[in-house]
Image (tube, rainbow, N blue to C red; front, top):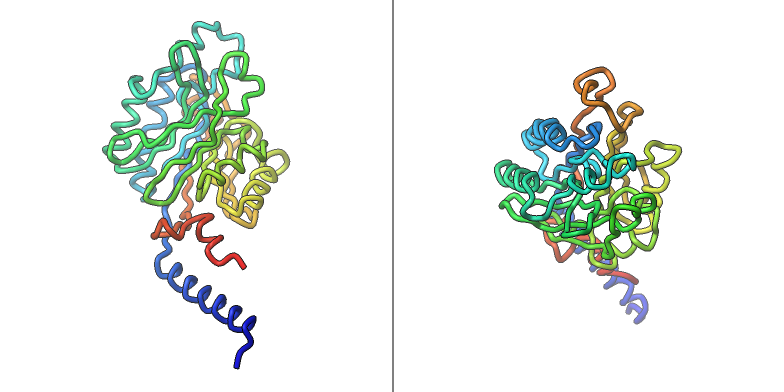
Length: 292
């Protein structure tokens, strides 16, 4: 007869095999698209018109989650402190009543996608570096305000919550750019139930300054991270491995006159992200189900 310890081990491994088979049968992927597009600073209408064809292209390519860069709409105007304060503040718009927010919402509805879009949010007298998640049914799924501001703090207000938002593909956390450098901010997304992270960005990029940071956050939290930047598309896996990476030029910003020219390098990138069909078996819940 099996000893009590051996029986427990046998039952544990049997259960693990059954779960693995169930997950294999139920697992699927969701196509995520990242739009690598240079900023034009302070030109909301121009930036919207530039990105809409790429969003449509990504939807036609089968993407169900489409991601822009950080503050794509205002071209990350916070970087230029020579912009008069009132001019800068006027680039923000309220959520959900802002005109460009409404245009993006209608686009997500029409294309049947989840759209993750970065913009400057106006909330009465405050301004936030914000990313919104817009749903395929024309509703606001959630919004996230950047927490780790550094130079932005002279004009923007930091967010305070590592918020997580439910989708049919699992619980999504959205961090913004420098947030990835703060281990505690990132860890809180997973404590709040995130299954994977999306990171619209616009600062450091490439293998020397950025990629090891994103890899470390993936490895620390055993999760996928999709990083979208004006010069880079990057996906890291639960073990910290780089699963997809393309550097597209060395510029984040172009002038209006350079649009369509040699320096205006842009492209839609795709990645088929593994997700669990059964939300009860997704993310951290799956990893903890048979924790010996």
